Length: 109
Ligand SMILES: [Zn+2]
Image (tube, rainbow, N blue to C red; front, side, top):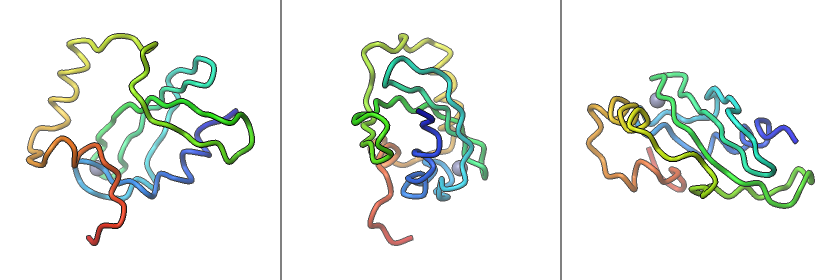
């Protein structure tokens, strides 16, 4: 199953945590797949912020599969380099962490 087109359908529901632009036209690259678990790199086209999304697809190849973002216990441990990347990406960001992680649904902007 190619997960990218499925994610693309929903990318417009989310905004870049840094520049707030819609992620509808973001770049997506599959980094890894283990069974129904996918690791996808998402890059904002405006500010080039890149972040990694781990998700598990349920429901097989129906095309209507519900994707559930989660911190996978089978993922490799977070390294110091990972933290440095996040730190660099968030320089200048002054919002809350939860605002950073939540999709921007039902919000006027
Ligand atoms: Zn951005």
